[in-house]
Length: 217
Length: 258
Image 1: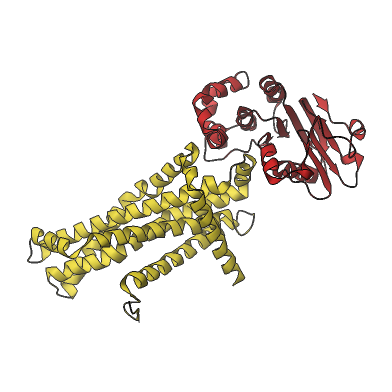
Image 2 (image 1 turned 180 degrees about the vertical axis):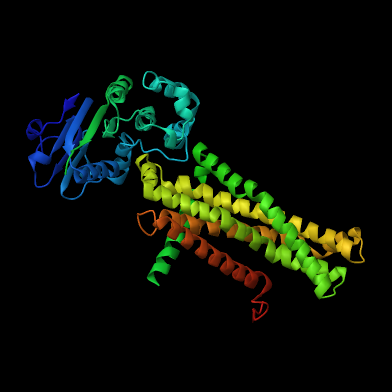
């Protein structure tokens, strides 16, 4: 996994072409220390984000709509010149994994996992059980027990895992994962560290970006 | 005043969205949500409504016979007018507001405050498609079904009691009923109940998705707004229906020249 270091980012920037960039986010006027410039492919970590910057970044990416003071590049496309249809098409290729998995509390893990598939690709629901078990293989002790659990009975790791399986099923080109290590013990952290590799094994051309929040005030 | 206008506008927009997006009911998660809503609002409320219906039918007949010293024909006439056309839909609507209205508003407000509605957006799912469309249709269908139960039980209970307490046989009362009641009464009550249910669901969903704050205190406030406004809307719709269909409201105080 590579870290998106500020020094490495300085070489890229506002003048750079968006081609080959999975996630580019830079304030205008250009402030090199706040620039995020991540190439397509592989697993990357963006460390030391403040809560405010994390929210701005996630909101800009999910809405495919940066504020006027920001340049946003997603999957090789400069978002500024895009029409709404183009933005919607781009949004379909991006998935977001919140720190708590982003689960619905009245659905069990299985229902949470298949919810987006049922909405966006209902015809794929037939073969989904085998794919879910494949994704859980090696990451959950007892996959069947996990799938029957409601979020209130899950550990923080199980919530993250359920959220991960949900997004991995859709095979997005860009995954934005938030605080993947937070609230986990060492064994769970080791297991959560395998999410990017598991995703990249199934989506070889994909990009997995982990957003780490800065600790302290 | 501006707040009232905004809420009305919000509910109308939500209604427009529901009508436009009815095809999402074919999607498996939405269909499942619709089934759950019908079960919760309709099936699990049946026992309560049966009991209330039986009490009402019996009460109306007992009252008419004892206090008004009426004959069987008048008792049945009142049963048809009051239960079939007015009380049945209203009792079902009140029960739906009590049970499902509060539950829907509270559930959606909690989902909004805890970030679950935002999670749906992050999954590219419009919360109105998944949360509002099945609830509106489920509650509307369930309210119509509950009204039918109230009518059957109240009328059946009333006729049974009449046959025991006045000098008329069960057969006479039943035939009297079929002479007085017409299918139009049932259709009118079903349409009215369906619209009552849809109105209750829309208002409660709107307040659930727009709680007045982001703290946990906003949840009961949203529930109060949902329940009071949906009750008001049901009564308003009832007045509109009475005016449109019978040409009069408020027991004849306002009469239309139809």
